[in-house]
Each structure stands twice: as structure tokens, then as C-alpha cells.
Length: 385
Image (cartoon, rainbow, N blue to C red; front, side):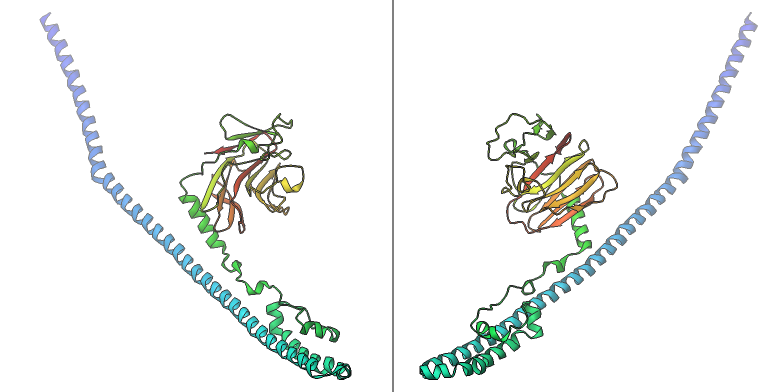
């Protein structure tokens, strides 16, 4: 029995030794793998990170150099255009000043001639000299004035009409024909329009803006076709008018519109609206002078001079202002639409916040504070804060 017990112990010990040997072999293999990882993989990874970081730096530097060069070239081109336009406007003004100074001198000479005739001739002499006065005197002076007035350079700078017939020379000489307003005497702001500058500016603004402005909808302005949910951000359309005070001067009584509580009168402002539930809406800005009453175009967003809106109706997207729609071609319907207003720069811009794509932009000289404005005629839209 003792012999049997000794054999069992030996077998157990042998099995344990084999198990420990297997464990040691696994530990050795694991150690070898770790050593290879430390000696080969990690250095290779470290070198890979170094190479990738250097490549990334080089990419950033190359792209910024490219953008910088493009900006420098565009800056030089635009500044040259500004200088050229400034010189052109100055030259036009100078030409006008020279011409009208000469015209004043000739009209003064003509007046002196006529006064001399009135003063020195008696009645009989004046009547006898009528033909001579008007054909030799007035015609001569007025004719010389007209000859220079309608030279090619003056026609370009003043955009005046062709020379008058002989019968109207006296009227011209007496100053009935006055200098006309001409756009060529003004600085043409379109000389600084640049798609590159516009896209860079818009991208920079959209990337650098910390977030949307805090916009609140003014409940006093809400159309009876709209309701404002408890979140104070969602406007919901109903074909049936709600029972509200239509005599409130701020309220739109026909079109499904609503205004924000506060206006913007300086700086750059942006806000976003969720539109994924609606197939009929308008978003944009307007003056406070926008009429609120009636079904006419004067209170209809985008159909007057006091509102600028991005519009969707079914699958049709448009920009609307002063009754002049401009189609906006979109591949897909945005879930959200951002509105960006640069008051001093005179621009309202609509964009897709998800992709940063500019949907449409419009330049305008804003003469009053701008209110965010909304309209919805299908389901609901919501401010995104």
C-alpha cells in the first residue's frame, strides 16, 4: 500500500512538473513577444509617429503657404482694383469740375452779353437786334458751351442726352439743363467682390463663432396660424386660426410669420433653425418697419424691400427679396439651416451647419436694425440654441 501511495505521488509530481514546464514555455514565449514588441514594434511605431507627425506638419505648412500665397495674390489684385476704381472716380470728378467751371464762365459771359443788350439798346434797337441777339449772341455762346458739354469724354462721365436743337439753345444757356446724377461719379463697391475672399471669410467666421446667438421669439408677433410651444423655440403651423388679439399692432394677422424679440444693428450674428420636419418655411431677417397686417405683398416675407429670406416650398428652394426669387439648387434638404448676418459688411448668408456649405449669400446696405424672422406653413420649425 505504501508502494502504491508512492507511485501516485510520483505521477502527480510528474504531471505538475509537466504543467510547470508548459507554463514556463508559455511565459518564455510571452516574454519573447514582449521583448520583440519593446525592441522592434515600439521603436517602429515611434518612428512611424515621428514620420506621420512630420508629414502632417509639412501638409499643414504647405497648405497654409498655398492659402497664404493665394491670399497675398488676391489681396494685391483687389487692392489694385480699389486703386484703379478710386483713380477712375477721382478723374471723373475732376473732369466734371473742369467742365462745369468752364460752363459757368461761359454762362456768365452770355449773361453779361444779354445784360449789355438790355442796358444799352432802346426799345426799337432791342426789337431790331432780336434776331442778331438770338442767332449770333445766344447761339454763339450757347453753341460753344454745348459743343464742349457734349464732347465724348463728358457724355461718358455725365451720361447726359445728345445736343439740343437750335430752338432750345436759350433754355440750355439759361441753365434749365442741369448736371445729372451719375453712378460713374461714385466709388463702385463691386470692385472688391471676390469669390475666394468671400468663401475664406465665411469659412473663418463659421469656424470661429463660438455658437449661435440667443434668439427668442416675440409672442406678440406670432400669426394666429402659428403656436409657440412651451420650449419657446418651436413654431407649429395650423391651418385654423387661433383666437388671439388681432388688434395687437405687432402681430401678423394673415401670413404665418413671427419675429424675434431683439434686433441686430452691428457686428456679426448667427443662429440656427431645425427645419427637418417642415416642407414649407421661410427664414431670414427683416426691418421692424415690415407691415404686420393684411394679405398683401407688403407683409409677405421676401416680397418687399424690408425682408430677406431663404424659402422652401416642397422641393423648391429659393432666396426671396423685393419679390425677386432666386433659385437655390440643393442636392439634399438640410436638416438645419444657419443664418449669418454681417451688418457692417452688408451681407446675409444662409448655410448648412452640418457640412458648413454656403447655401446662398446676398449683399445689401442695411439701413435699419435687422430682426430674425420666421414663417412656417407645414408642421414645425425650431430654434437650435
